[in-house]
Image (cartoon, rainbow over all chains, first blue to last red):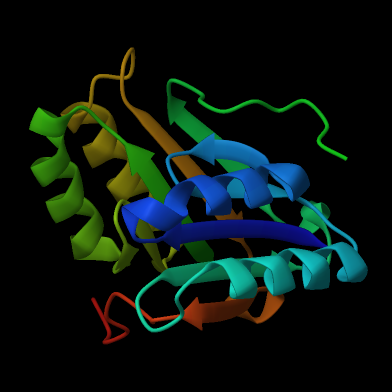
Length: 87
Length: 87
């Protein structure tokens, strides 16, 4: 599956969320990540984030498609992030 | 088509980009927007943003699928943004 994840967390929880997301996905922009994950990797990522965050305050929005082939991506302006493989 | 748009702009260009994106899409989170657009609406949005931003400095990342039915969305924690219709 192809995953786009965006988060909005309290500042003190940001480093952990960033580190966790970078283990599984490419950093694209401030608090925006994308990449391909298996179902198992996705579950592991979300379980870790659930443990790290305060779900009464922090917010994560996830977009998933069965395959990257279903998603057209586009940059306008300066491409940020890194596109090298993560796992 | 279903569109997810994230941007990272210089502070002085942020209000314009926010106002433009809110005309077409739902604000989800800081600099994150989503929604359904026709091809014509998408072209108009991107043309307006191209004119407003400095493409040697600012960055916009867009994810598109042919239909919202191809995308599974999920909130973890506090749902932000507003889901009322835009256009």
